[in-house]
Image 1 (tube, rainbow, N blue to C red):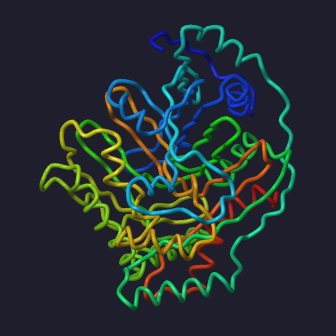
Image 2 (image 1 turned 180 degrees about the vertical axis):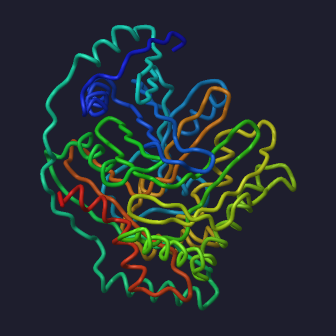
Image 3 (image 1 turned 60 degrees about the vertical axis):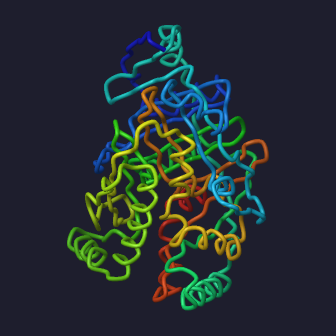
Length: 416
């Protein structure tokens, strides 16, 4: 991919959808990363797309780590390879446990131009510039919650009983929503989700008939040189109707003892995870309780960094840190056992991670949240939302928070 060819952006308002459609037609595997121009500590994803015809699992990808460029996704259920755990709940969409590919083509883009890295880049770029087609709206689909409000409240009560008995301190409990449609187009869905909820770790990932339509605000893990960076999110509040209310809500989140306690527990968990693969004494909390605005919510984000030990492999990194603590709770293993007991679906790609690895071993992986998983062949999709349950959590408040997190996806699917 050493040859590069530069093209001006086509004069068309929907050119990114056309770009994605071209890749969708040409490749069984691709990943589109997009930061939507959002300012984020240590930056969001670059604006880039990769594609290939062959795939690997994580164990195979580990052999190429630090030698080849890689793109990959790891399912939450990869936890069963990290610890002695099981996933026996129903599967809304059966997702590969881990899937990586070595890119055959890379394309970077900005507001002014796009750059194709491929031996036939000149032909490909011209083809993309000329291959426009009409995109219509997606059909309205009926969204079905897998958990009733009553069952949600019962689960929260049971989880809080475990906390009272000392089994754990905090657990991330999630509920899923499913839908069916033979005519739903994931590329149109991605475009509409970006309009509703632009995020710094947005992505459209394809693995044959399976698609991830992602609007993630959260970073799992980034490596720059010998530095590791993790940025767990714990703490959510809605945006205000005007600037005055927005500032009030932001300060309410910043000074909430409950949200700070949730955030701190996961920061401590991440410090512990990073210490397994980092130089002694190098783990540092760069920022604690930072509050950042997004389209529909304010989020409380902390930044933990460390110096990675020399010659640590990709598999070793994942086995030390995955799944991310923000999606499990603390302590991690007990929480994952109880998640299996109280949730009624296999998370699959949801609360897993998607990212890009450079040939020198640097990488950036997000947390798969605020995202739709869709099987185009089956015409079935799902998404899930959750929140951290602590001893003093109020079930009604947590339920409303989950619906707030689901709102952008609901608007896309139900066309509101």
